[in-house]
Image (tube, rainbow, N blue to C red; front, top):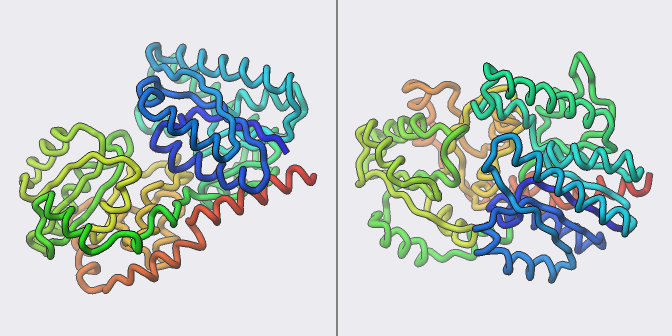
Length: 407
């Protein structure tokens, strides 16, 4: 059974390595022949492309690349989609495909045209309300007439995809409910919820010794008994750096000697400068860069994972990658309400704590709760496994594939 997989996100991107390749390797191991067309940044392709190619080859997955460019706003994405269309068109003319699987809205627009032309079933793996994210994140200022026109065009295409695809993947139950209860065009086709999962074999605390944790703390001049709050990933647009620093200041007032560790490839000076506004200095903050391979070790030396995300309509359909990776390590999370299914998941499974508002009293309430509650990291990990493990995600995708192909 042959599957054509289209993605705007690159396989050489961190997201591609954590949220695309592992799923497709699992599906390939189930007997699917998968062809990927992805948009790849030149510098990442140069550094990681050969390793990714060999990894995919071992799994029996073939890969074709579109060169990513954002040099000309609006024009560059259109050109990349056109190239993707031409590549996919050629493959569909030469080979029989049983399924087209599109990750996010832009590739799905290409996939929908291919579905109509070749009568091949289409999975719209929507990854959230993309156009609304662009507007709410101030990437598309709708006071600009051009961006307003683009937003309206993409929303029309989204409506087309939600009615004309064969199956929809939603990251959250909250997003699914929004689609099914849309008063203008309620979605009638099947929707399966598959959150951002984590590889529990890679994110496994049992593979990391106490000695390695203490050595890493020593490298960073963190005392062995110091409490560590960790933030992982990019900063900006949606992630609320100032509010997280403000929370940590309250936490540190209750737990002196605590350290806020940032594991990010963002500008380190920006974090240090923001910390100064909250009277947090170099003794309080550590900033490091890391690839995916070492991420479990960083999470293992922390006491809690902190991430605040700006809430909004689009964020109801979001599933943070860092949530699954933290919980896989048995690490409790501290986050804010209004993000995807996080409120329900955290409350039902005791995965951590939610701040109800971005103010001192809300922060203090959470910190007080943290001081009173004893964390059972093994229980967190095992509870998360059934919901957020890679195996659970692959199983759900396999059931979607099988359902479509049997039909």
